[in-house]
Image (cartoon, rainbow over all chains, first blue to last red; front, side, top):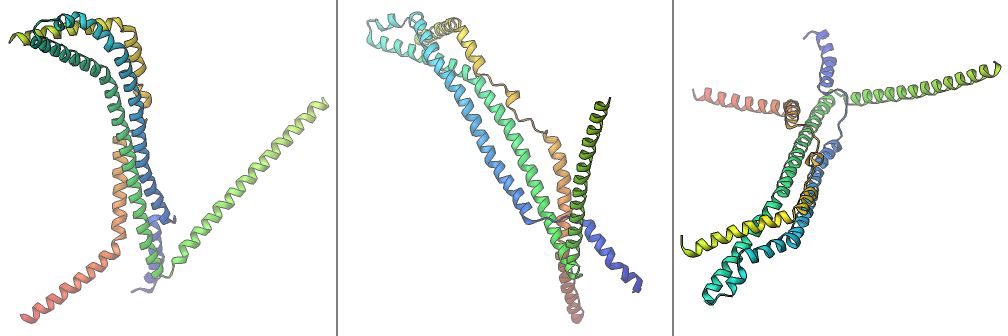
Length: 218
Length: 99
């Protein structure tokens, strides 16, 4: 092999390694955190569903309470007269009395139940619609988070391969050094920006003082 | 239809009339109850991105993950390839011996 070509191989390989995923490091806690978020999303979803159910249960209780204390007595008062319950109960044939009273009671219960369902149906439909949209939203969040977790995990695996390759080339320290250098440069840039801001503030204050003096001299 | 069934149908008609009258008498209260128990679903629904948007992003990330996984398995695959090539080579040698 041409010695010059061999000489270029190493740096090229390093470039390739860093091109795989740049210099960022991925601690295993990132994957753990993402996994924990996914798990907790499940718990929040269950709690959200329970809250929805409690809210609609309250509305159902409110409706049932009104229905039992207002509508049913009003209906029965009318139906006792209109349905001829008293006349039926006063009949001479006990068998016929029993039959008619039984029929009256069955029709009354049937009508009451039908009315109750018609009042509760819109509440149940609202609850089902809301639960459906919340389930869909959480399913998307959980799926997206699982995708991110898997991706982070794959990055970790690539990093491990990268580490092994660097170790084989005895260059493992290089990445850490580059990272440290970059972090240091970034921190210094931050400090410089802060100093600039500070100076900017002082200039503003001096400008104000100058203007005040000018005003006084006038 | 027997006599009892006819009587029951008449009762059903009376019950329906009684229910209508109860509705009329309690109209105001029923309306107030409906208003109080209706939920503003638009306000309660979570305002999240639509599923199509999620699907598109997830598919892109999945593809990137697959590529990473493939890359991470490179060494194992190369090792496997080496082992298999060695095995096939040995079998080929044995075959030549028989021939």
